[in-house]
Amino acid sequence: MVRSALLCSWVFAAVFMSLRASLISASLEVEETEGTVHALGTGASLTATPEKQAAMRAFVDQRNKFLAEEKRLAAEVEQARKVAEEEARLAWVGYEAQRELDECTIQFQLAETRAEETAREKAAEEKRRTLMDAYLIQEACVHTARRTLRDLQQRNVTTTATTTLAC
Image (cartoon, rainbow, N blue to C red; front, side):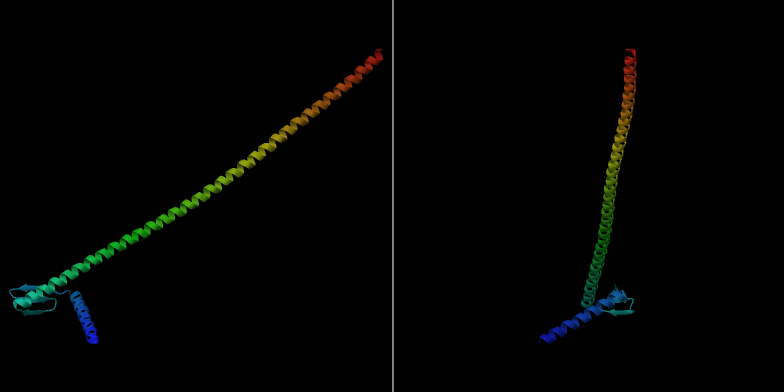
């Protein structure tokens, strides 16, 4: 019993898929004129009873609903694909922007470090120059003081000698 139900469902699925494929691939169109149904694209034509015509119309309506639903789903899938592509593009742009920001931050930090080093070097150079100037001034003062002392000593010796001679 289970086997026959399973077999029946497989047969139904195969028939349905075959019918669906033939409807879509042949692009079957049905036209009804005065009780005669023509299947366009197949060359088939038949005269049907009102019940068969109603069944055929119901079938065509069902097929048209199915095709419309398939188009709607295809449009939704396409829209979802476009949205996903746009999100991926924006994510990439965001990644690139973040990478550039990180690179700029690193460059700024390097420039800041170089500026600090340059400032320290300039300060050290300025300090060295100031110390050198102070040393040169000190040397000049010492030299001047020694010369003045020598001059004073010579005057003192000369004055002492003159005083001694005068006495």
